[in-house]
Length: 110
Image (cartoon, rainbow, N blue to C red; front, side, top):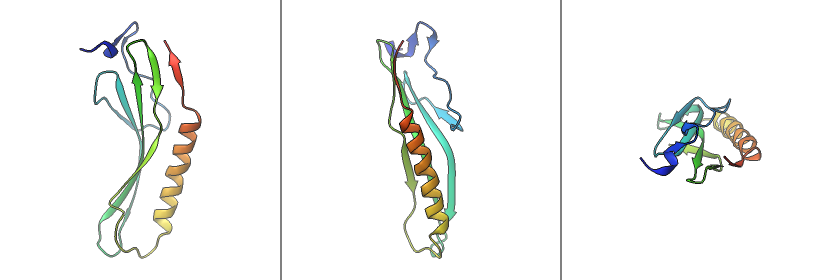
């Protein structure tokens, strides 16, 4: 185990934010938070596009917690659309969530 994994309080697991519907721990001392998924169908190719907001939270060996910038992940959004309304609405909702997360980011010394 690396130093960031073990803290005075035990294993590093920050509080799950209210917008998070699932977390992943890709590395010791790192937690990725995931929002709900907005999904729709590409009218011409009949493939689904997906939009999701993600944020990475890390703890340094000195106990400093850093919340990374939240980002909008947009997947498979290529092709011809019968209507952009559903995609645009989902993109705007994800952008609003991302902006509110980034406005409240913190860097805390434990």
